[in-house]
Image 1 (cartoon, rainbow, N blue to C red):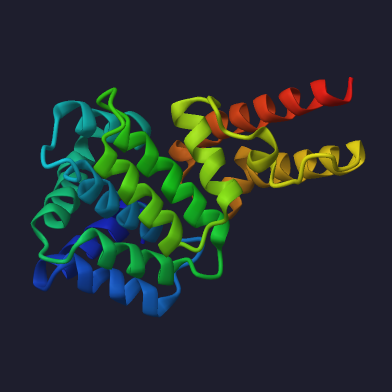
Image 2 (cartoon, rainbow, N blue to C red; image 1 turned 30 degrees about the horizontal axis):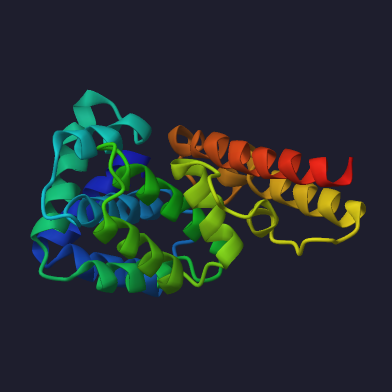
Length: 227
């Protein structure tokens, strides 16, 4: 069964009941490294995020399409999942819980999902307080570490006042070799090849570029303390 056939099968399942029940089914099956499961979860959460400030803007919808590329012939399938999620009585928190179960043995995948949600949240040029609140809610529901959350915030909102040591997940004053080791580890985990290996659709691996930019920026900032 092709990727889009799996998406279509998921839509048929969701239309019979709700999108929330489909997410429950995917969670029960532990759909790790499954592009269709990742995509359905991402579309559903993106739709909920787009409504977080009470208004779904064209910018937010365009932002979703800007990183989730798909053939025009398949646009109706993506739109259908988006609409099913927006109409579902289940809330954002319930969706977060379901997605967390799907990828509970793959925390890196959950960081990938949150990265995309950040993209949707800031697409209209404004980081609405309610959206930021939901992003933190997502990080907590996914069990992500503070460094992971700050890496993503720095990726989309700029390094700003974010502590570069926190972004790399190390304590100030550690040995230079520990700094380099942390940097190398993060570089491996966020390389495009690593994303593809954990089931992130090929068109979405570009999200690693912004994350690596934040990691590189923090690393370079820290190195000035040792020069």
